[in-house]
Length: 237
Image (tube, rainbow, N blue to C red; front, side, top):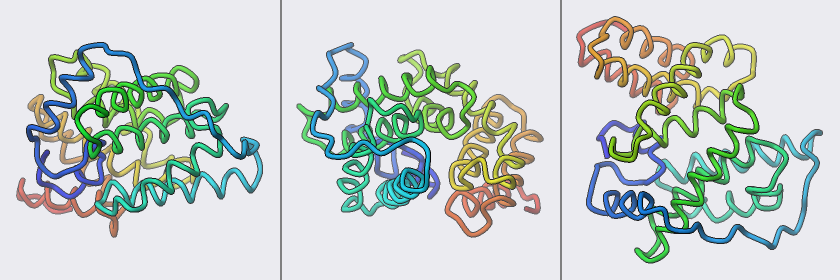
């Protein structure tokens, strides 16, 4: 994977800090179209998708997820369990579905080779399902966009990644200010969007995106990574 910290937080759903043989093996397995692993069936509690309990449960599951993708893998089983208890991939809440998919992809990156196939395919299916349920949900689009961004081009998801990241990045700053988007997700979307613009020779647009990321998440990993990109381009945050 890429060495910048935000790539580890992610929102590389595959873990690690560099593009390596394990990732290549994983995406080769995903690309073969094998059947996904069966979704969890033991869901002890199905919380309502509205109300304080659900919001708190999702927030706690997200916090554990972000810890896991930052390297604290002991947090991942608890995050997944909380997501399963809210319905997992069958939840009526698209964010629960999307985070279940993202957490499943992270689990796949550290699973034995024979288990990677089903887990990775299942995670991508859940992210697509979540976007189909809520195409205007910024957090849902972010999770799919950043996952697809990290996949090799031969998997045919590059345009999907660019579309998702652009959709989120163009709305991220006001959405974060209004409390409609997690700043960790918003800033990371802007960082990746900036990288996508840079690869397409739009340095001005990339710098604007990184500056926005630094504004909305100044003390977070994504915000710090945005500053690194700006320093590399010899411009002020």
